[in-house]
Length: 164
Image 1 (spheres, one colour):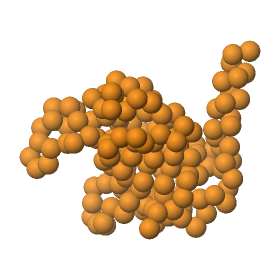
Image 2 (cartoon, one colour):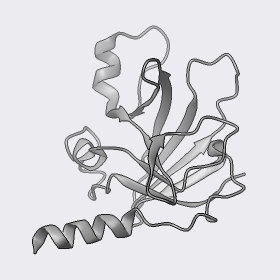
Image 3 (tube, helix red, strand yellow):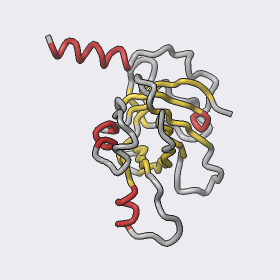
Image 4 (cartoon, one colour):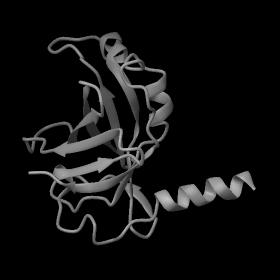
């Protein structure tokens, strides 16, 4: 019985209208979690020669936290590897510096209106109806921002609108 309720909740999270994200490019897409506590605001990378394929900000309701997110495409197999960071130092930094300020790291998936899971679209492509960041909630709960953030999000965020 418990599994049926969980499967039903997951199914509801992964069901979206195909027209919701139509006409919005990924670099302008805004996503939110089911509780209204987290928003991902994608923004243009700003350079065709950048090593990253997507940039985004994570805004957490009822806090002054705004986290930085990047996506870098890997090769063989192609994956959209993402990182969410909080107050990372700039300039010449070490791997330990980056590890200390990383809140979440993993593959970001898109979820189509038909429920099909794929890689996150890059700039210039139509926005995904939903994005899946596996283990985002537990990562936030175990990160340095926990305390300021008091709600851990679901791993699925749904398209809310198209930014400027």
